[in-house]
Amino acid sequence: MEISKDQKIINYFLEEALEHLETLEKGILKLAEDPEVVQEMFRAAHSIKGGAGMLGFSDIQKMAHRLEDLFKILQEKKNTPDSKLERLLLLAYDNLKNLLLTINQEQSEILRQSEAIFLELGSYLQKNNLWE
Image 1 (cartoon, rainbow, N blue to C red):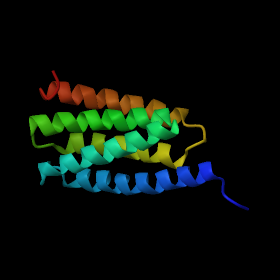
Image 2 (cartoon, rainbow, N blue to C red; image 1 turned 180 degrees about the horizontal axis):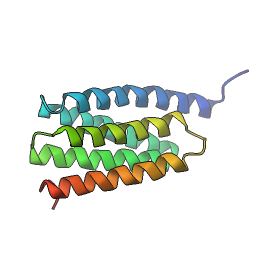
Image 3 (cartoon, rainbow, N blue to C red; image 1 turned 180 degrees about the vertical axis):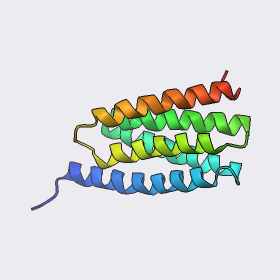
Image 4 (cartoon, one colour; image 1 turned 120 degrees about the horizontal axis):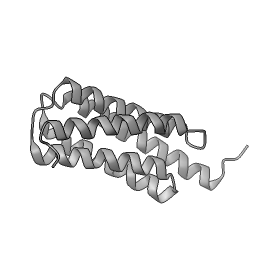
């Protein structure tokens, strides 16, 4: 069975996105000891956002964009992240990964969970004066 050109493009996107996810995960786990890693995480989220946008995966694009925005805030504020921020970022990472792994499947539960995580992240950033 031959794979269509569209499916090859999607497979290529997924392969690249999974590499970017690896950068995100490693970065989140190193963020407390090396705040400079946030730049790599920003670029990884940006790359996922761009690829998803080109292919019309708007939910993935939106989630990657939200992460990108959070990383930009962390770059600008240069505060040392605590365990709660790390946990929230890992939850957001997990949801983005799940969206990528379930392309073309029902994703509403993942999106619902993601919204709650991003609300909590926003609240955390405001509480810690990282987001005006």
